[in-house]
Image (cartoon, rainbow, N blue to C red; front, side, top):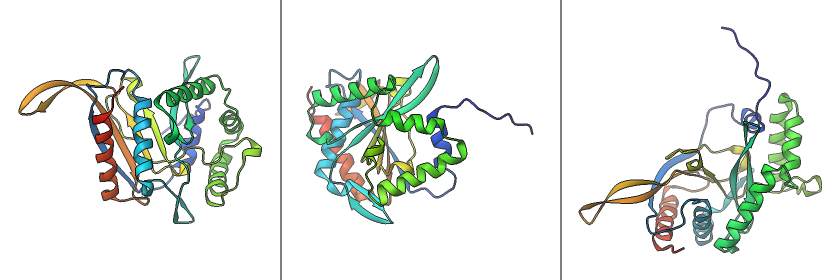
Length: 256
């Protein structure tokens, strides 16, 4: 069998190749179907989902863990990162914007910070992440894995602050959110990324009209599909069930 080496790959693909190499996965997956018919502004559901998870994390501190040296430590802050699609001259790449202390933000503040972060990233103007991505882009493939593992160990396990090198501390936070609905995908599940140390990953699917049984009658409702992946090492099924119940309660009572 003949193979042709691929030279021109995205930064995200280069990082992914350096992260996953062996079996052994603590991921637990599940879907949530959220009725958002009563929410008027769902053309861009990402800020609402971020707000929902920030509230859940604030209510349940046991969900806000990070693993260091095989032991669990509680994060002092609630930070949520959002994957940002970059389209340059027809070539696609993937990066992320992180909202720090998001539980203290109003919905308007979440929308503003999210828009600002995405704009900076797409213009390659992020003061921290831009430097890190340029560094990885120029790095030889055989060094990528070593760099990522070393940075994760020094930053997460040893707690070294690399801000003097313009590398962000705990860059991904507690939860990673990605909007697959913006790509026209109804629902999807995303894998845990060991390097990030995030315990929960959420994919936001396309909001669609679907038939739903309500009080023994069928109604057409606006349904949003959330794909949730969590790290079973950080919390178990009972804690996940509480998270799901609170998420459903948040969306049921949410008013925009």
